[in-house]
Amino acid sequence: MTTKLGARKWLVLILIGLFGQFAWTIENMYFNVFLYNTISTDPKYIAAMVGWSAAAATATTLLMGALSDKLGKRKAFICLGYVLWGLSTAAFGFITPENAARLLPGVSSSAAAATLVVIMDCVMTFFGSTANDAAFNAYVTDITDETNRGRAESVLAILPLISMLIIFGLFDGLTQQGRWKEFFGIFGLAVSAVGVIAVLLVKDEAVKTAGDGYFKNLLYGLRPDVVRENPELYLSFAAFCLFSVAVQVFFPYLIIYIQNFLGITDYAIVLGVVLILASLVSVVSGRFIDRFGKLRFVFPAAAVMLLGLVGMYFVRQSAGVMVAGTVMMSGYMMMSAALGANIRDWTPAERVGHFQGIRMIFAVLLPMIIGPWIGAAVIKNSDSTYIDLGQVKTVPTPGIYLAAAVVLLLCFVPVLRLMKRAREAQ
Image (cartoon, rainbow, N blue to C red; front, side, top):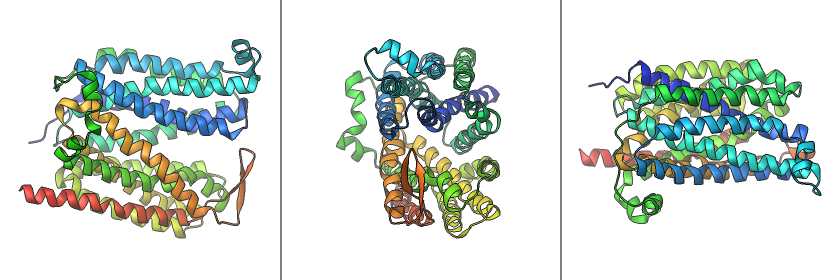
């Protein structure tokens, strides 16, 4: 029997999910541009910002997810978190070398401002991970079940792409004009407003709690005996981790590859077509994920993504990139939805918030460390170069897509093990 979410819960998923993705898109794609264009071209600050932000996101999700479990509440974390998340995002528009010099006299104004950006990125990430990664993701698990998680995940999977389309298409001009205060202010206030609206929309579900002390629960998912007691969950984490590593092999270099290797300057149009078509495929696929089973659906989804990766290795023109890119991203979103829904199915109901932090380790922290290094190893011997942040760097080559395909095949190891355990249980 299919459980219906209802209009209010769907509105919560889409509205809160989308505006959270606005903030994450700005954090992931614009803070580095803001830092480089207005404060300092020294690449060490961008490297520091990315590293500290990833660490802050993982630690925050562990800490606050466990706390939301302990209190048995999600709504307060979502609502207050979104309000503060938006305000901290808007605050970036006020960071300038001149303002930083007033706060930190005697220190180089650019160094002071760059340091403030890194610190504020961690602050913003703390509020964002509290509200979105820990509380909202736990809330999604609370309100869904095995009959509808595929559909919910397929919708959530397209929200980052819709966010990028809206920001690139309607607001990127503000950044091109150097109007950063307006840019950050618009989205910051919008995210805060959604936090206020969430007070009316979000209703706390009955959250099961384990009854353990906070600090015991905090370290629960890192214990070897817990891994042994929940093999399906950790095999699901492993599958998602390998899938995410494969994505990170090519994704950080995607725009650079299109611009500098393929020589396609109108990449925004190409990416727009790819994201729209792939999003439509993802929404349609959600019903099939629930109908045919999440693990069974991984195989055709992976086949689609592999076909797209191989296609990206061969294509050289805009039309070809649109076709291969659509296939690749469609497979990516379908796999993300199926594997993500499977993780929710195996998450212990009394520790949903805590395991959002464990999920971050496998879905974000490890892939963002391992994947880009694999991609860099593949392209480092290329003779072609481009200038990035004042440095001469190697142009990404098509080999990154074949490397991603090889890594993607590895995710079948835990998936097949999961299917074997399911057959044995039956």
